[in-house]
Image 1 (tube, rainbow, N blue to C red):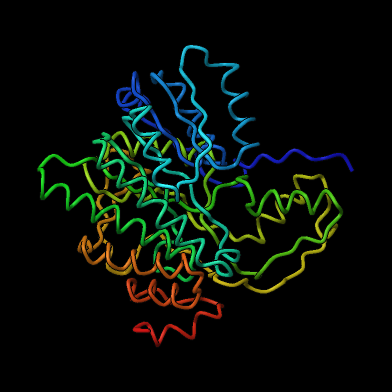
Image 2: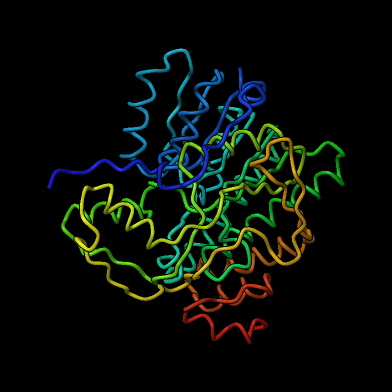
Length: 376
């Protein structure tokens, strides 16, 4: 069977999102832009979009050598007028990161570096803390130290009422960034803009469900599905990254931006549409139900129970207002969980995450046993 073409945008069943490109250009033009996790699906698309707005330079930072090499080749062919710098760097190594800030003096940081696969991080919680929590703290602390203008954290709807280590690690990162902003504002009165953006699953991103389905269809099936009724919110890569840029431009302080993504989509319906797009008859590809994976929810949420929503001038972008946490409390807890993670103490690491996030209740996970023992 010839490899079919999938129009991922057509799977959304809604109108595409429109951006305020003038506001984005006003923020980015002539600036030095640092993108962490630049070789990933989100980071690389942010880089492509940023280059359209004529920055002075773009610093592409990632620890993945080969994807970073290919991204550098791709972008340098079309953007001779912008200085491109490719930096091999692990965000958990703060001293190396500091040299990047000293040498390239970024004005804006888009922090996309993260581990994101829910079942894998459920089995490797120490890496979730070291990369998603400590790594974010390292970048944010350097943003403060070097008085960078704007820091944009790429987060996820899995941080809302988290049921997985991955979602909890992103929520802890969010709360640290907000607490850091509040501390700086109290001390100086002139805060750096620390902005958080949350969105759902990104169609076609590395390791996401649709490329997996496409490969399974190409091989004649079966398609593996964890649950017949599992639903997710979806955006295209271009939409997600464009909204990140616009949120970064409109942000004033410690906002959490959440994006309108239409109604949640049943994953089984996506699979059936992809079978149809491949030119196959209904039933031509078997669908096998495998069961929910560790940390996986049946339905994701965009808002917590105590979250208040504030609209913006863009109907697709809303501000989620949540209770802040004390900076010293966040700092102490992160230092504790990081210490456990560095010693590869899995249960102690997750228990400290639950202690810091009382609403973190594990789903389909061996760590459910800790939900009634968060004072461990």
